[in-house]
Image 1 (cartoon, one colour):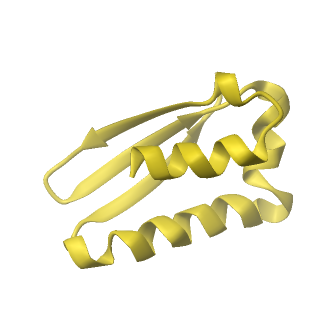
Image 2 (image 1 turned 120 degrees about the vertical axis):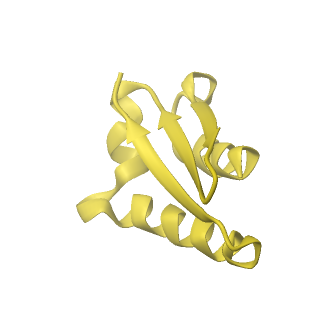
Image 3 (image 1 turned 120 degrees about the horizontal axis):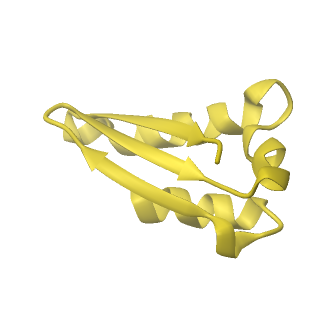
Length: 77
């Protein structure tokens, strides 16, 4: 999932070298922390959170077979 999110986000931002994705595995939930440059934060979140919501939908669809929940957190530096 880490590589999946990283690939999507790098296509959206102006500074793809500043994209950082970390994955924290839990027993039933995987938390994916996404960090981008401050000027790219709006591009990742989108108007009214639409882009972030779309990324979360893709994550939940791709992990539905694994019986594990995947949560995306966008962290501001």
